[in-house]
Length: 463
Ligand code: BES
Ligand code: MN
Ligand code: MN
Image 1 (cartoon, rainbow, N blue to C red):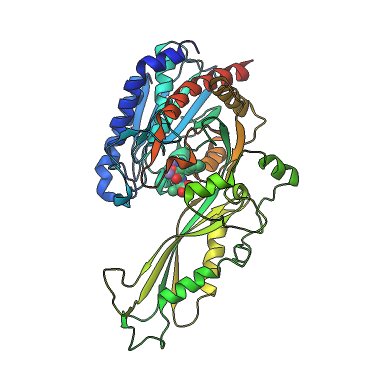
Image 2: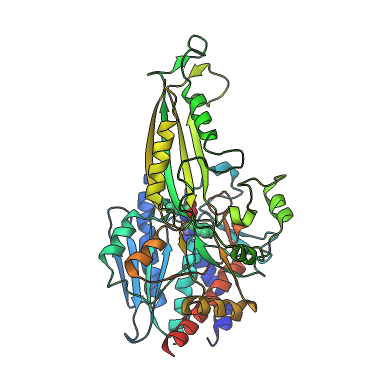
């Protein structure tokens, strides 16, 4: 990849400014009041793909937000890389915890990003990482070095479960046919410890509702004599973990893939400093399933977490009341061989069964998806590994991740191709949190590394 460094150096200000323009659009897929902005972002992505050199770019309407599809086909006999990413972002709240407004990007230095980081919702997840691919394509096209065919599929509903993308993929298998899927929507260990994510956890997301009396009651007149839905709900939730922090839902662990001692030993070799980890989060100790390390707990083990809980009076001062209803949102992260629909059903049966008489319980399933593990003895992984080695000067470490991109398992099922997760963010980049950011160095390193993947993948697949 001749001149990649020069090209980045002479265009970096423009690369950064283009990303900043994209980050200014609040494409919050979960909040319908931003619907117009989400549609506008799809158009901005379409334009960016056209400018980068795609010879066909289309916006595909769905029942929800559009999918932007772009391609540059140079020779049907050459391999095809399909790039996936998302232009939607998570809601930015709580707003008061941001040091600068989430949709007014600014560049600030941090301890881990001495060359500056772009602070904005979506900077890392996933506009910044998606845009690295657009700029990498621009470089390859402008310098006449694109070695193979490329297709882009950028969606606007990843943060709300990708339901419509699933339908699109199933209906456009030929259009999306490819030899490898490439995604930058994960992270790496550190800027001097490159890693490639080899696994994603599955997900089952449910909402529960506990109803007691038919109206809110005076907590003196009725307190102690009727079931308080908030008391009951918290008790039920507590019972979902045992004293070893294992999940108590019957059958929950039945299909969990257990790693061999050799695999666990290999995993434990990844650099990890518990003190730094605790310090960064201001916690005195870590917490989790007995018998597993922190890195195992957040990648190869399934979990259950309350994401939100509400009910009753939460305003200023005190109000003596027993609420009629209490609610919670619960996510379960799943690992290979657990089926998310089956786990959702197991949760529902169990949660309903532990409700005491005196309350009614409703379980409302939201979205979900299967876990995914990418093999490392493939041309795709080797090409990615060589690409990192070229630009970081170090062989990347394969590492299973804890997050979820539910569509990836579906890609394998529908398109029969493997996915390579080339993430350039850091865990500390605060995705989904206030002050999300993406290192300028990481952004440019991604743009530099991606073209090498194309080169090595094409060389290895055609030789
Ligand atoms: N990019 C993340 C997933 C991710 C981040 C995976 C870091 C591995 C490392 C993605 O946008 C995301 O947030 N996914 C959701 C699931 C989705 C169904 C809302 C998640 O993991 O919570
Ligand atoms: Mn993402
Ligand atoms: Mn996300």
